[in-house]
Length: 94
Image 1 (cartoon, rainbow, N blue to C red):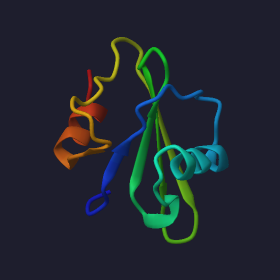
Image 2 (cartoon, rainbow, N blue to C red):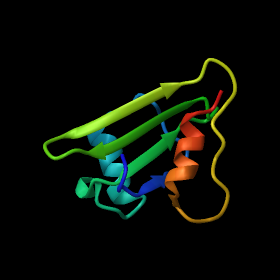
Image 3 (cartoon, rainbow, N blue to C red):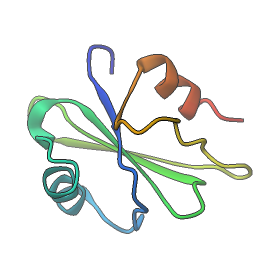
């Protein structure tokens, strides 16, 4: 996902949502364009589940990770965008 910007949705996301509903949330809530190729990250209430949505040339990719223990740390600050280093830290939680 190098070269793509990463944005974190700050609200709580129902993990039952799939491609189209998440893309609509990107448009409506984040005011971003889901077809841009950027990565959009969604967390559940307990922050132990994460979905990442992005457009890859000819279709959406939906990446899902569930932690067996612990939780994902939300990045600090008020902005939606996070660095690739911070993204790597989030997905490599142990």
